[in-house]
Length: 282
Image (cartoon, rainbow, N blue to C red; front, side, top):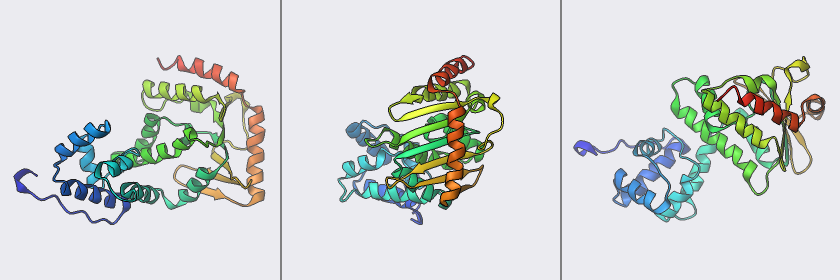
């Protein structure tokens, strides 16, 4: 440290800070400065990390990227996946309480039906599109935005796993034409949606604006079916989310979703619209 200063000790009062503290201790026990650690770590793992990012992680300001914990366990030859376990704890803590039940059900679901009436549903958001939304919600809080982005990518990893859910998505036309971020951000987002319109495990239908009023208008809905055949609904507003478990209420919402699915554009028609919409974002 410059001037012989000792790094400020962290108080590990959260999983994120505990992860950072253990990383700093492991590095210092090896006698590695931050610069030397980065040089050796990148050389052995081929995974880039900047000194600024390393500092933020060690201070417990940001969550590490999902790829980092297992690489740290191998680099430091830790027992029992120490960094992986601490990272999992930090991720659990970072999810607000009202979203934890939703997250658990989403991880287990064999089928997911989603409706996005205001923005692209989270499972289909690109990194930059999501970051623009997070920054709009908490302006100036880059640490929070970065953490939310990491959690979002962990959710999305399920879609490319060996056992992905069957994903069916309804998206309002206005969502696909409302620019979020720069034209480049929006173009990348629409290109990703286009790539997912009709795959073996994902189907996307656009709800045309001319359809008028419908039972899901003005909200966001996720329907999750577990391996046991139970379906749960999750309704989300700007800053709140409600898990719906009562069977009669879930059936009511699912009927609205199914009716809208039948009245929306097919994947082929949706793809045609997306290709046209992309022309507005060169």
